[in-house]
View 1 (tube, rainbow, N blue to C red):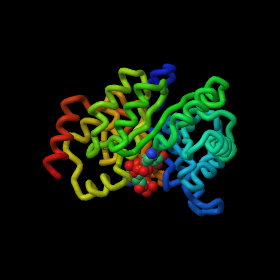
View 2 (cartoon, rainbow, N blue to C red; view 1 turned 135 degrees about the vertical axis):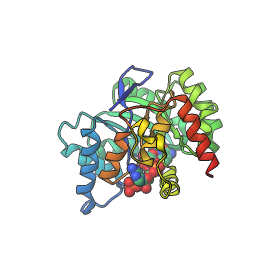
View 3 (cartoon, helix red, strand yellow; view 1 turned 30 degrees about the vertical axis):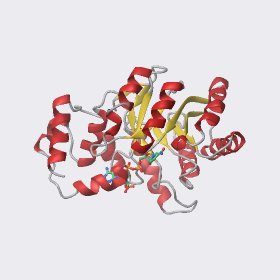
View 4 (cartoon, helix red, strand yellow; view 1 turned 90 degrees about the horizontal axis):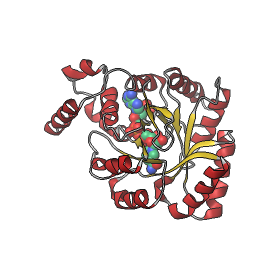
Length: 275
Ligand SMILES: NC(=O)c1ccc[n+]([C@@H]2O[C@H](COP(=O)([O-])OP(=O)(O)OC[C@H]3O[C@@H](n4cnc5c(N)ncnc54)[C@H](OP(=O)(O)O)[C@@H]3O)[C@@H](O)[C@H]2O)c1
């Protein structure tokens, strides 16, 4: 799988990861645990290692922690999770719980979920980064209505990562935030690349374009992920899935030919003409 450097460190990050919202929120004795172990194995076998979770996602952190602890070489992962509460002490308590659920002593990336009380939590995160408890810090959001605030944080603070929404039918981040990330040396994790699944459903009955083979794509999911990765500011995209076949499909987007600027323009034009 292709990798891209995290601007603040130069560390290489594989371009396709796995989001755990919904898919990993299953019971401790669920039949789905075996399937989720296959999702984890599929991503790691393909050379991926980024898993994104949050205390907002029900049992997802606990499930991910159990699966990774049982997987060979658990160190070969990049775990991103979030703090999603108000107040310094409440944030610390919640993040300590994430360490316990994920069963790790160091979290690769801790993000302030939806910018909730970000001033407070970034203070804690800066001190934890210095102490080595986390390796990188950042903030997230999922809607363009938050972009003014996101932009202000990106300008004011020193962030390693910003996680935001970006997809073929939701390109507002191109206007200011993606160029700003490049200017400020901030890595970009892209969430909801399939519009939460709705974008893929809208494309379900459309034939793959004839140029798909030129960019080594055999599915719409791969085309949508390659579209996101074609933006040079993007470091990694984290489609959510609890399905190993979908994980394998998504991983293919991290290999082969990427879209050039001309093809990117063409995809946008074809999408707009069809909608
Ligand atoms: N504010 C925030 O910080 C924030 C907000 C939203 C999301 N996120 C993060 O970003 C991740 C991605 O967002 P998301 O999960 O909401 O939406 P998404 O990635 O746009 O779409 C997920 C949906 O697509 C389906 N899917 C995935 N791969 C597929 C494939 N190859 N073929 C067909 N269907 C496929 C999944 O179903 P299956 O399970 O059946 O594959 C699921 O229903 C989340 O999981 C979460 O980690 C963060």
